[in-house]
Length: 609
DNA sequence: CTAGGGTTAG
Image (cartoon, rainbow, N blue to C red):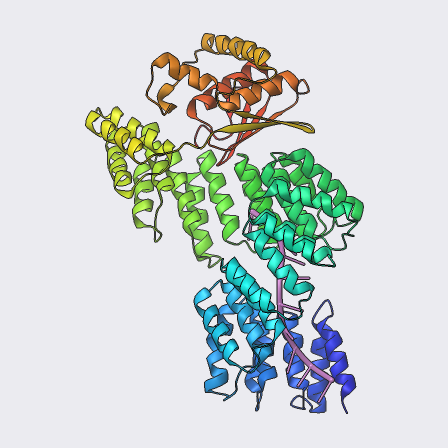
């Protein structure tokens, strides 16, 4: 009888905005049909598709007689509004209060909530209930279960469920392939792709974005090229943002630029997601100017766009610009979130704006109702310790409501060394010893702290601990990007084609540096050996090799861009400052924790990292 | 005549 109303409501659910749906709702109310047949359930689902959980919930609560459809709709509404925990907590009311049993639609929604929450404990309970129910044959729920197990890290269980799906569709295949990819099981993922008959853009997106999530950036690129050979048409921007994330993580500026060109060519340059990843990519590839340009020309901007640029500016030591951008953001009515404040406090700590940083921390809680996480406390600690407020820093460490790991204590210890706080250094060192140390660089810090206080017995203890705990120093390497070419250097590498030219150049620079007052700081060398040998070790650190190669092969006058897997050692940091002033060129190093822009003998990190 | 599943950023 009222088919046209149902049909119109369904159309409203897929509209770009909720207004037609609201108008139709008003119309239905006026006709007095708001409790008629399937209309209330359709209304709930219409509101849920627009993420208007409040409207959906009001209708749900006002229904005199709820059925399984109402429950499936409200659970989906919670999931779509990013409140999966609410789904789980109200579900018991379906059985206890409404005396209803879940059907396969309800099961699929519940599994979805568990997947979002990554809760294996509840997921297993739902799975058990599903198996015992009369709907245990349902393939759709099984596909959701595959996804749930994948997200909980149980790829093998996911595969077991996958194998029981009697008629697999593109979604079941995609869930399993994405699971393998996200767990880094590349060959299994590709194997499954081959078994599948028709591969579409979704399958490829699941595979490639999964690989990006598990850190297999190079494989992701190879497969992206493979996909284009298969002539899969890119009709939505998801895959592009995944590939941009991959270039960002590889710090491969040229590659990122090529993807940017592809984005423009296919016509996704106005996509919000794509723009945001591009801003981040350019910042991570140390081309902050390009990041700003993408941001300025972006058609749509949200918190993430603003925050991406704020974080980018902060990481490159451009604190004033980051703070100014924050003011613009507030003026344009965008509400900041937790990540925005990480960037802002980080920015303040780099330029010693202690009061400003402290105010921002307070403002985050008082003005925006956000609760600080471990990252915020770490930034606050950094803010204090960089400027020499070590008592305040230690206080933050002792009072913050999070468990503190080795890296955080180590950073305070390095601040103690820098500001000559021997007593506190010993206190912190003792704490670290009790905590258990894994990172080789922490051992060096500890050994230096005790040596500085002439506590030789403890120095010996640290050395012994280092041997017995079998610390393996990850081999250090640096990549230098020269336009389309990239060269990788490992520490101590001596068999490079251009070894002799590099040696001559480095020796020449070494001589010039020593004339300017450079003294090698051998306290960063891990192994026990003579002073000369230690100096020789430093001489062959990978970042120096990479810079030398960049100077020899790069375009004269251009910026030398280096990416290093570990942190830059203190001695290399000094050396790179000297080199930048001797050769009059900018050197940008992205190390494991931050960016260093060496220019005219100074570094953007203000010598603290 | 109503309802359910997979991929994207700081």
